[in-house]
Length: 110
Length: 116
Image 1 (cartoon, rainbow over the protein chains, first blue to last red):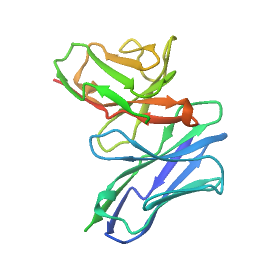
Image 2: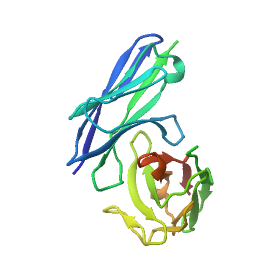
Image 3: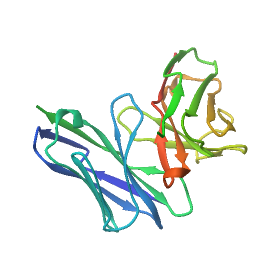
């Protein structure tokens, strides 16, 4: 069974204080690892898909990286608008379902 | 591109009534859509996979007779919560698989269901 573990559960940052979120996963064969952002009361917003170890993707202050066992989401010089819950999900080969982690709630104070 | 809508965004109903939630892919066709449920402070739990023109596939523990899914077109899937009870109150979110972008799933804004 696919397993996704995210840490920490919550992260409080000062504006401009860079940090990283971790997503550890176990899957029989990885089709893709997905990062989403979810604001309270809303559906998840797609951020990145990573397909193979060593791959990196960037979007504004966010950068996602992937190894064979984990993924990191780096937030560089965060702003208050980066406050959200960040969800990691894996998709196994031969399947289209996503298995989600519990998420990391990031709060950025001005 | 890749926009998914849900309707209604919020619904309050009496116990015992049925509620239908619509999920639409607005700018792409989706042969596969997914229905999730999310309780407060928890992550998304997959309920079922909706396939256009065929029966939905339900996850273990999800009652298919209670949560009826219909995927009659390439842009619309519906979830009907039959004989809703207070324990069915939750945040229901759909997603649609976009085959153009390597199987990325795009999510709708969610439907908040409150059963009194």
